[in-house]
Image (tube, rainbow, N blue to C red; front, side):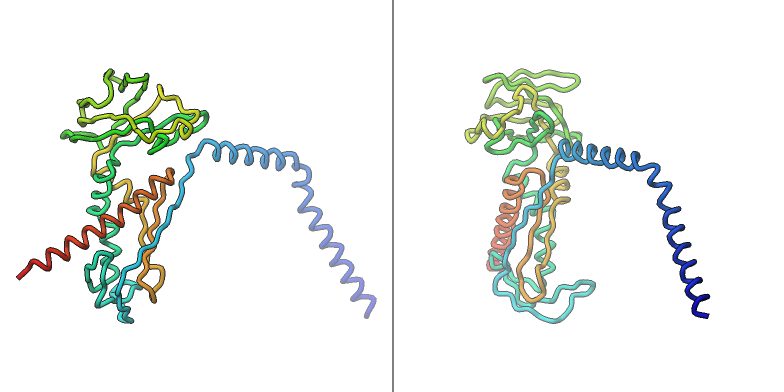
Length: 279
């Protein structure tokens, strides 16, 4: 009896060994293809990282002061009702959720776009990738004086800088101008000025005669920037909000978040002053 059981166990083990080897054999015969595939994947990954523009997530936090937390739930939300919530500028409201929606609103982002003159992007072409030039890395500042009716959401021009000569062009027209002059374009009137903060070291490798200017309408820019913004309550026990912004230019993302908080604060103060003037 024991011999029979041992025999059966041995047969099962042998069959298992045979099955595993049979499964592996086809793959072993094709091992060069696996090596080639892995190499190709590494090459594609390297090229993607080299040519893709990285997106950074910049975060900040703000404290909503003098808030009294409550366990009462807001309908359809995980946030608790705050019956005596004071905003950064002293604005009282009955819900932290309201403050989140205010920070995410078009009005707040519109204030940021206008105050920081964010309608125009200057793009430089490096050795491998394109980068947005901003502050110290940008040789110019572009002021949108007025939009024109019928303008496309985003308009792209080529820009060549040759000392004090500026050459703007698209597929149909070329404009030769200089700094501090009103430039009438089909979609907007703009003024280009020298950036006094410009540091050539910050734009190393960028060809100043081969720049790209992207000019957006206010609405298009507001919608674009809103897409990268997130506002969340860190936890239910504290009235601290976490602001996050996804953008390829870190210093610009930081400026957008800082000015968003400033716009929110100014709006809260304005509302408080309006309330105090009511009879």
